[in-house]
Length: 147
Image 1 (tube, rainbow, N blue to C red):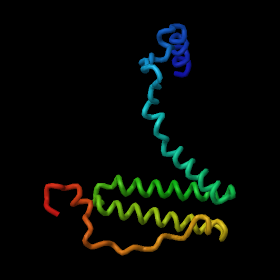
Image 2 (tube, rainbow, N blue to C red):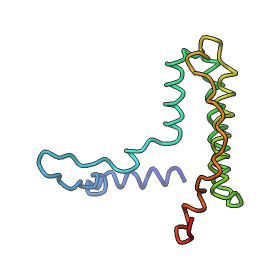
Image 3 (tube, one colour):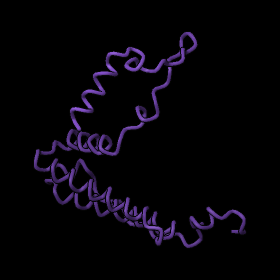
Image 4 (cartoon, rainbow, N blue to C red):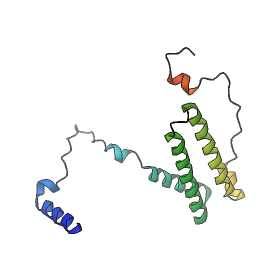
């Protein structure tokens, strides 16, 4: 199979029309052609790597702490994805569940920090009681019903 792939790749390499990149439309003078969408938005892995780098720099994390942080952030991402992929959870509950997962992750991150790092990371935010008169996501998503 590999030989077949190599052979077909070799035959295409001989044909300059098949190896040339597709022509990009010319941009008006002074303007650049925008990057493809996939090039403009970092992947989930890139965003996670950037968050680890940013917290490592801000908190001066050790390699062991970086590994633990990466594990916690991956776990957070998987938990949040599970919440949003679960059609049995109402939309309004997904927001609260996502916030709870994020707060739990922040507490776990604080637990792996030393006292100096905790000062830089900051204290947990104060708990706010829910507002009983606030609109729910369901109300917002269903504008045909009066609020």
